[in-house]
Image (cartoon, rainbow, N blue to C red; front, side):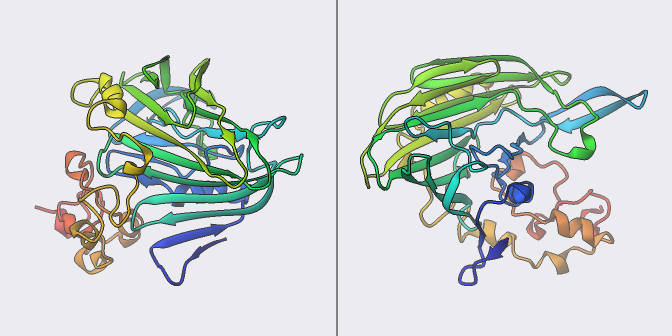
Length: 356
């Protein structure tokens, strides 16, 4: 069950792992920055519906449904940058669905825009490993996202396999009612590695927008690249000492062919001058990812005073669409209410603040 921490109304906390509730958790724990957003899916679960969506990246496909041709347009589910899992010696890759979990907690820090997950797992040999993860979609650089994983062997020492992947095989099939429609929007996959990076590109079938991801893994030991169809990743084998934490950080850049300077920006954004040199520089301490948020104007705009500012006749629609504005939103303003301080997204016709 989701609960709001009474001491901190900016925090949403889930205790325990419930595969049947993962869809709702993923939706509520989505992180975004106004350019792209990623659902709060686990990096390693079996019952997961990953989704990464870029503002303005749409595609149209024709489907045969009940003997008729139906044309549908979707906001495209782009390649999944999250996958990261691990395995103790002699064990299969970890996933929470079939693991003996001693502890499991997921927390969304709304003020800082960080999703945290903590768990303790005991394998078949009785080895207990504690995992702490932090995730963000950067407000300081709208192309970057990061996942930090800290692993601690509580009662054992030895090698631990860690696999980090970019997955281009995802589709738009997350909603059951739409699964009769085509969702295979991505094609022309390409992948490679070099200079400490792995990269993957894919292109939408009709709109011909190319999305490019580049990932850098900061780990105690270098990784071995692995390629499997529309997926590419690296496997690392750090040595864990009992009680000593080891951190693996995955930093990803996502750009599209509609961004300035083309998709080749993915590489310099992830590893070039000015990019985060180490995991510590990615994580917000008192302000979320940059000077555009925190206790500044961005959060004041998001105050619930929008109810009295907007006289929309369809208040339910506006209430569901209330959102926290991003400093990147002015560059991507589809359907944004012109009275930006109301923090409301509407159709542009129903609200008095949008007329004229």
